[in-house]
Length: 129
Ligand SMILES: Cc1cc2nc3c(=O)[nH]c(=O)nc-3n(C[C@H](O)[C@H](O)[C@H](O)COP(=O)(O)O)c2cc1C
Image (cartoon, rainbow, N blue to C red; front, side):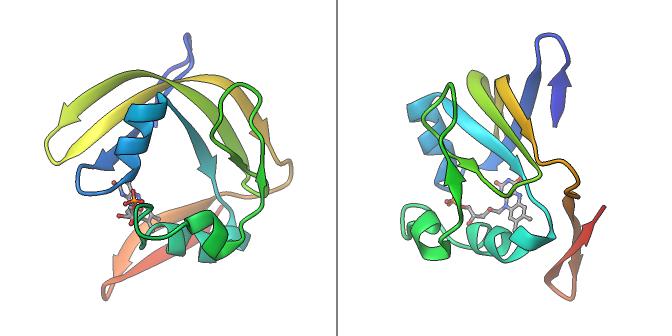
């Protein structure tokens, strides 16, 4: 979610039980990639496996592109990619909020955005806008 226009700040809330927050703590950077329908299988795989147990990039074969300012890769076919440098970590109960300064952003023009609309019968529902 957006936290500030100037400076440009975005935040992600990550469960303490996951692995990704450890990587962000170590590297002090992250990419926010906003997917589209074409990436739904990748989203579902990334969102149901743990990075300390499986190499999600190798397992899905998702296309990546080098970022300009950070070492984390961009997701080539994502609708939006934002390179973020960690500014702040906030403890929020069972999650940690990582606030990042956007140092570069990319738009795949004409692509829509896939949103997770919650769950129905235990299954995540996705819609593209
Ligand atoms: C559409 C979608 C959205 C998700 N959003 C979040 C989120 O905002 N924060 C979070 O902690 N986990 C979220 N998850 C769950 C994590 O992606 C999941 O627990 C994953 O296995 C964590 O991987 P990791 O252990 O490599 O960090 C989401 C999953 C999906 C499929």
